[in-house]
Structure formats: C-alpha cells, structure tokens
Length: 283
Image (cartoon, rainbow, N blue to C red; front, side, top):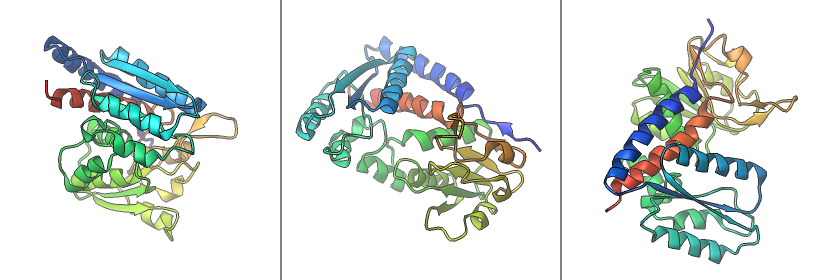
C-alpha cells in the first residue's frame, strides 16, 4: 500500500477561492475584511511567516496592515497598540506574531486582544468556546487538520485518534476538535510510557511535537491516516516533519507531506477566521 497524499497546497487554493468570493460579497456591502499583523523584533522565521500571511490576505481580497516594531518595544506600548487595534472598526482580526521578545509577557498580550478579533484562536475565551462547543475561533493549525480530514471524506465517529503533543496551539485544541466529531481521543506526550503501543491502536495520528522521526513505520497500523504538523530540518538542511515520511507512506492510507501539507492550511484558516470575524462584526 502506498498512502494517498493529502495535498495542503491544492486544498488551500480551493478554500482561498471561497474566501475571495465571500470577501467580495462583503465588499459589496461596504465591508472589507481587515487583518492587522504585529511583529516585534527581527526573528527571521517570524519575518517569513508574517510576509506569507500578509501576501495571502492581499491575494484573497482582504485588507492587511503590517505593524513592525523594534525588539526593545515595551510591553506597555505593545498593549496600547493592541488596544488601539481592538477599537479600529476597519480591523476584524488581530495577530501578534509569536515568539515575542523575552521581556514581554506573551500571554498577557494574547489576553489583551478582543475575543471578537482573536483570529489565531489563542485567547482563553476562544479556548473556552472550543472546550464547551460554543461558537468562537479555532486555532488555525488544528482547524486546518480538520479540513484535511474533511477533504478526504473521513468520518471520525467511533475512530481512535492519537495526538502526539499537548501544546495549547496544536495538541490540546486538536484533541478537542477530534472529540467534537465523536472520535475517541488519546493525547500522548513526553511523559507517555509506551508511545508505540498507543499509536498502533490509532485510526488517525496527528504528530505535533517538533521532533524528527517521532513516528516511524513500525508505529503505524496499516491503513491509518497520518497528519504531520511538525516543521524540522533534516541532516541536509531540508524541511521535514515529525513523521518518517518515506517509511510511513508505505503503511498509512493517507498522509500529509512536509512541506506542502498542514503548513499552507494554517495560513488559509487564518484567512477563514478573519473573514468570519468580519461577517460577525456589527456593521
């Protein structure tokens, strides 16, 4: 068996076409969906992410504002900027690029963003909405994973899903989203005694720890669906995920590649969240 590739680039393109159409419909009513991206400091990876987010907005007919600040910006000044953006009716989504410089409390900044504009889905109100099944913004990476499962027509009801990783950004929200679709969910992490015993039971595996080859072919049940959220470099310096792709693709039924899998979906779901924020906003 050779796994079918779940192509994140192709699915993103399809979803972004839908976003552009919905954005056009809003513009016809006099509303242009707006995203503000705030970057503090000069982290090279963050600069690339931010540039991609801004470009994706513009390509899909959304208005984007990029605010760049020096690494020595004070926490108070950043909180003041967030507050100003909260009060700006032309901005529907606010994204403060992480990581922030060490002297700024990232959680305090996230909590300062209005839940109505929290398109990253990191605010405690968003986490609470996901936990209780209320409307809110879902974090973009796990939301993208759910769209990928949907794209292959995968019914999660009664399936056993194993999430490797327990971060607030991917692991925990991923588990809750899978649970909402009636999967039986196991969360594995660095304290899990026997990871292989868990993953061999799984119908769906989401690997999200940021560690190369955390999932190898001998850990995967034949026919399982494998979603690779990891972003690492191999010995040759090439981008790779958390999954041993070459081995696992011969065992799984479906697999996401790195690059070109979950990555493009993360930015696409940010656009979807921003659009929904604009659709919900009082006009």
